[in-house]
Image 1 (cartoon, rainbow, N blue to C red):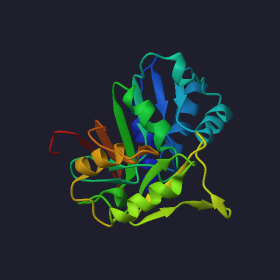
Image 2 (cartoon, one colour; image 1 turned 90 degrees about the vertical axis):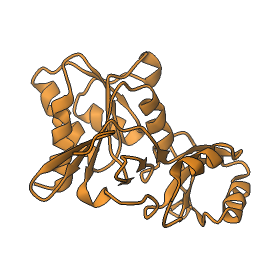
Image 3 (cartoon, helix red, strand yellow; image 1 turned 180 degrees about the vertical axis):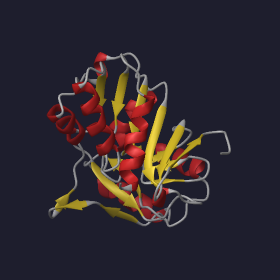
Length: 225
């Protein structure tokens, strides 16, 4: 079984009947959503809140009942992927371009589980380019600001045009190699006019399920396991 599949399917064990579930995006969560679809077919009663159009289409194809973000007051559990996770369970997300919606869902969740394969675990964040979601109007001003800050920004391109998120924004990827102080960087990015959201997800995940070659490891924030 694939490492991603091991992690993705393990997360389903934390779902209880009657829950509102945040459905993340990405290749590992794909296996989670497929497994949820199987359980719904067998009688599991849940409501899913999707974080992207791609996730919405997948969940609909599996007949998972969906509700919008505005139809719920709270989400019981969100299961999502991550592009990088450090030893303190701080993460970078947004490789698929859904970081804004993912963060909105995360902020409304009582518990958050990330599912990753072991290659996503790192000592220091930054090897994976940090996405920032920016307003198209005047985006070059943001790019220039990031260049001045030494963040090595690159506008994400798809099929020859700027990649657009589900919210109609652009993504600029910051190629920083190492992020020594994620908290300080996140604070700086939040103050830049034109940046809608950044891909630093700090103090967010309660647990990370890590798929290895033949086993699954679960790390819990604030605990050494």
